Image (tube, rainbow, N blue to C red; front, side):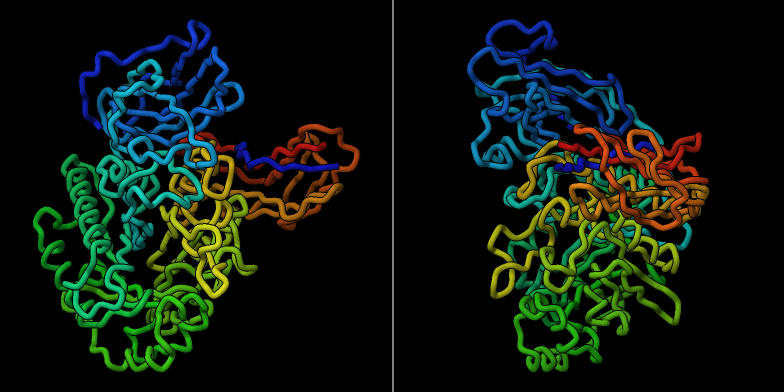
Length: 611
């Protein structure tokens, strides 16, 4: 008997151009002729920043197969949304977020897919968000008009805690070759203002009040800031545009999150403290003192907060190379011997904190113990992340939907997403300790090492991200588009919604709610091992049901074994129910959750197929 488990199902631009020759097609049941591409949507209006569901139908009367085509959505004749293939019935459903108010025009085109290219095409003018709809002969759908309505954005938390999302803004044409999934927005450049705006709208909806922009790989090995290369100049440009979008949104009357920058002192080959101090002065002169950006930077202990990534502990005279080298890829990336790294540290002067509140950040603090030096963490490699204390009070912790350890994503110590259970377990440390700063690791990474091109002597240490399961992005992604190492879609809005719900519970909002995530651990011919995690109000106990019939009751643990002996072949639904509790969060994967007015039962289902 073979058992197959499917994905978890939780129960509980604007630029117009005249292109009058665009072909339009009627709805699928009315299509005539050789070929036709038609579009339907579930709504005619939507609130700013929310998503519409669009279904495209491709009717082929020739010998072409639907699987040979790639569908690409456009909004106002510019690429916007994930590229997707068709299913066996010649259809594909898109979730398309719309960040700008006004009437927008949605259309989809079909192009021939490139064989053996997981992205569908290698043409960046077709893949990348913001590119114009091609004027050459391509199959075009009818055009649908959607009215995007302005809305009053929620106020951000002001409870003394920083809910800080870790954010990358270095993406470009060549950044997506190893992405584990395809963002709902599509493959984007980090300087695209609509992309930035949509991200910020999601942040505000979640209650994120601080954004940390990653500048950590800018000045590797440099002695002075003016030695920075093209990569550093690109990300500075992208950051300037990011700040401009925040300023524009603030001018609309929207309360926007504050910004924190994270320069790097050591992550690759260490830079000198002189180079870092020159960089800090440049930031102060060009950003902090810029009237347009006044008030956009996160103030912490009276000055703008600056976080310095420093895995080699160069910024603390008590640091040691030995502590950093406990993590093998730290030793490789720092590119100095133990003696040379320690001597380099001794030769550095102090950091200039005249204009900033400085905090240093390392990673894998469960091994390096850099938290004992006051260092915060980019990501730790254990289910209970390390809390950094200041004056005997919890100051910072980093929570994550998954994590790798000292040998990367494919090593035994790595811990995957496990359908959200990992995220809940790491977040419990924040719930229990209530630190001043909660880092949410992380919004967007999507870039890692190609097969057989990892770090280490065997080229098998994979960092940043690896696969849909072994990755830590929470940005919403397509439910159907494949990734570099997977042939199906993935988490949709699930991790965005789970983040929102966990932060609400931290803040005591709708504190009567319980969150439940359920995962399977082991599958055999006759038995499934289930385990689950809960946050919020503790359930009385749990019930496990198959096809609606309770088979195990009054379970007080958070795991159990389920026998499938005696079940008929075919599909079945297995459900875990938390008893005596309720929730206001559906934890949907296909839309941004609005907490419900009426409490909902707390249960999660999986679909399994016996054959």
